[in-house]
Image 1 (tube, helix red, strand yellow):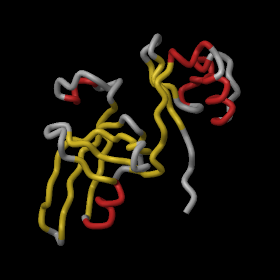
Image 2 (image 1 turned 90 degrees about the horizontal axis):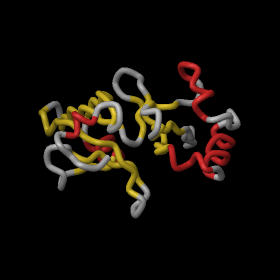
Image 3 (image 1 turned 120 degrees about the horizontal axis):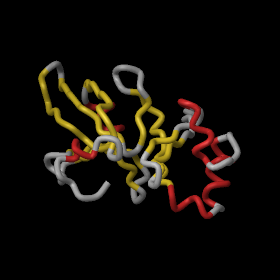
Length: 145
């Protein structure tokens, strides 16, 4: 199964989320190449890379068809055989050690789930409700993004 590789980035100086070609944001990439690979390579090899926080697309969509990215905050409702199993607000992160996308519970930081686990064992509804940069208030006092 092939997954589409895409990125978005938080511009730390301008305080805006920058997407590939949404809302005429090409100018915010400081004149970089417009392909995803060209954009990333150009920025990472320039002095501008320090101005951006990059986030990768998970390859998944929420219940409304919105793309889910690293750094998103999602509302999760899970059911096990039609019985409610758990719900809450979770932050999407990438676990570099295990090489997988995780959902970390914002209320109980010790609780998290792999996307694969959620999709394999539960009927789940996931809805993107914000991200760690545009909506830091959703983090509930968490200090770091």
